[in-house]
Length: 287
Length: 266
Image 1 (cartoon, helix red, strand yellow):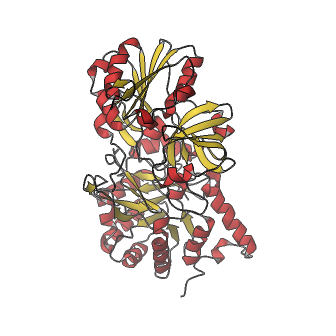
Image 2 (cartoon, chains in turn yellow, brown):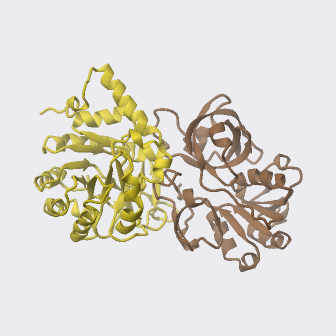
Image 3 (cartoon, chains in turn cyan, brown):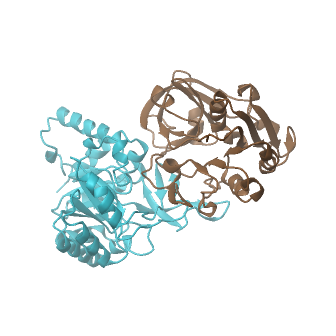
């Protein structure tokens, strides 16, 4: 899958990248209203990673339904919409609006974006709040619901358990990790909010450890995400307990990587005599 | 847009200190237009730094080959400078929209701010000369050492230099030279650092009379419209520099929304 916020709404992107290799396209996070996002600068490159402070620039739900969903409806590749909210009610409202919209195959609830003043990550750090939003969204839609969690929670396992108990169909782990860079000439943070979200290979071991830990604590599928840049990386997440993976930063840099990773996994399965990928899920776990 | 492994045909340092790398890359070269750019992966296989591709303007176009002009200033461009003839470089492109020449244009002023700002202007000068237009290339640099070698320019191009120390050409900032030269031209095209554009945009003498296109750079992770890192404000709403630009009409850009992407380091 393409990770949210790294593949736009998929429509322009499908002209440039072969999406038939993707298990799903996860579109950029959406609010009810259009948003400008954060001012420049929005990006900083860091060792083996990058910080972003995009701030969920987006078109709003009306345009998504009128302009993009009809295109998605014609694809074989399913589209999962990443939904955001400045309030708990906004998630519910968006979930209602998207229910039974042709072209939308599932929801990913974003309670984990570090770049917002209101909403986002603050909903994903408290198990009770996260569970409440999850059950509200579940009640508002017939679509499958996965919840994307933040590694910036004090106890992500508790959040994961609470969200699973609240009825989530799957978890995506992890969103970006809070990070910072400072301009030593200006003596100020580079990013306008001070902090941003760290992604890329630098966060892969952290994401992997979280997937491994959470996989032992919940019974719903986990989608692994965080710095995956090769078939080897993807296999590590699967062996740690992920049933599927999302590619973010690596796909922005190498748009051909989706197919390469799929091919690499297939080659590995042939070499290891693996008939079905599910045989590998969590195999590295010491249960 | 294609992701292609290009073959390095040559990679030479110019007298200005910048490098010119010629690549054999028909998938990109046969489609690319002056003002468009490519994203170049500046690391070897299996390496993770620098993570992001580097956006580089297309400097020259010749059939199935294209040239890139770059300054070896950091880890990525340093790696690029180490590529030898016959080596390989992973390129994504062509990206963005190039310069446009309208039917009324006759005398073009092409401005390169700094040693690197000249990069897209040589391919564009080639195109404009081919179309039978009169072309002046103005380069503004700190001193004569940083000037682009003039024997690389098409012979019919008039070259003007502005240096801060007066070591060659006009002794003034490039913005002053633009103001002096613009009355003799009907279109202005510029590439350079953000502060240069902001100075031009603030100069109503230039703006009142001449349509001006500028080639912008903002920090970008992807170059093909997915990261939303390079979004700026324009008179027509939000725009991605990589996809809606990098060439903009100077009057369309809301200049407060654009920042100098360089980060101060010791």
